Image 1: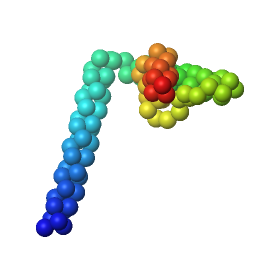
Image 2: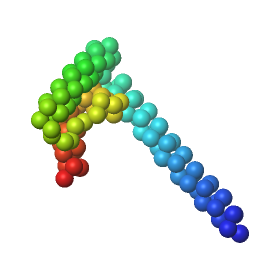
Image 3: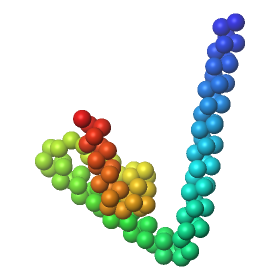
Image 4: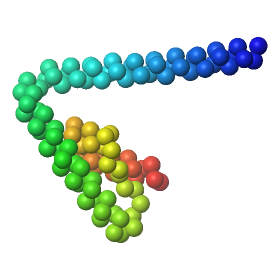
Length: 106
């Protein structure tokens, strides 16, 4: 009886995980379609995003170096999520990342 309950619980956990993955894929596709519809000049939009990503990565790197020299905690990592945030939102997105990081360190 206990083994059946464990099997059922593991099945339900797998089902929940797949539901959230499917929801994330659907939301991602919706945002992609939304961006493609709103930005008619796709090449210029892509170049703009790449430029914002590069500037955001440089800003995060320099801020982290500055904070490291002064032994300040709360550095933001350079990872795909932070780069995507800086590509879509620019410098205000990077400032938001640092704001979230400082808020979570309180």
